[in-house]
Length: 244
Image (cartoon, rainbow, N blue to C red):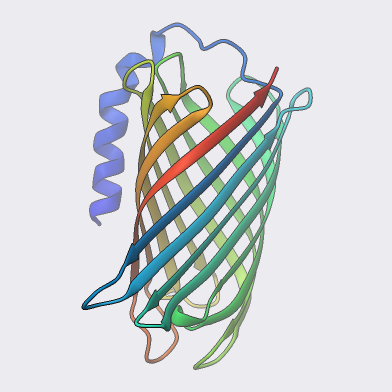
């Protein structure tokens, strides 16, 4: 699989950098809000609107994170995309490299055949690299998924999750992030999915950045009549607030 090959190659490149100096402590509270809009008029009419928020709190040895995103697209006054994604996570640090976490996820995208999906996951998070220039971590977990579908049978099963996240500081004002997540069902070996997102963020003013991102959602066992792959390309303004 090309995703696994890319992950192995990336890890091989990053390991020598692990000896770099550590970053200063992150802020106790951090909020990121982003908005994107693209409109076309004339011979064709279309509009795409996206909103997102990433709220992080770090009380003592805990990390509490809530992420939400919403995408809506209309073409010639016809709604062609409408997706909502929410993830809430509580993570407890055990030592400098190891944490345990609990996570709840909600997803809705009727244009992908998903009326709603609820997922509860618990697991272990490991920091492979954590220095001033780059970070690389992996997650391993298991849980339960309940999914209502527009077509075919609904899903209710135990699940597994494996993920990796990488962030590289290119300059003082620019960074790139790459997040990969594999999830599947114990009851159905062919029912697995991959979520992959890569983003480049550049600061344009104090507290304001420009973010270019590309996300792919691949479902190996989609509802009958729906495609396996959805891709989202976005250019957004991001407002960031942080408190020490």
